[in-house]
Length: 173
Image (cartoon, rainbow, N blue to C red; front, side, top):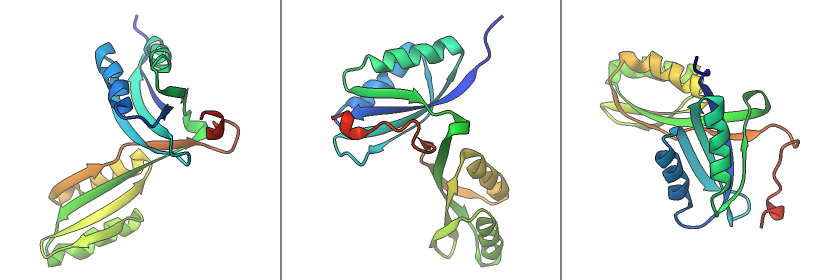
């Protein structure tokens, strides 16, 4: 009997060196681990980059991911961001085909989701929606009745709530 597949979000703090993201994604690829989402960006400390990886697998795979990533040279810290202790956000930009008659309805949908209209042309609207992945998915489902011309999603970014699990960057450098 196989184990239940889990979905986890890992926060990885790494030295801001060239090739580090490639080495991390390469490790996932070589080991056959799935990456559902990956985001990376510099932190308040310019020498440290925060990488957020959403992945899935059984408990043994999740444990192996943590151990293998921690062995990489530029990795300073890895830990799971648990949903009940963290805040996750994703940004999506959606270009929807909408003529003058349809525009008002699309704008109304965007307003319900606190989306921003960031570009308007005669034939389309570009909408920015930010929130958890479920909110982005729900918005996409509602606008699926219109032709989606282009879609860009950033992937999940996350941070732990409060100060309990803060990794103080000055201690890493």
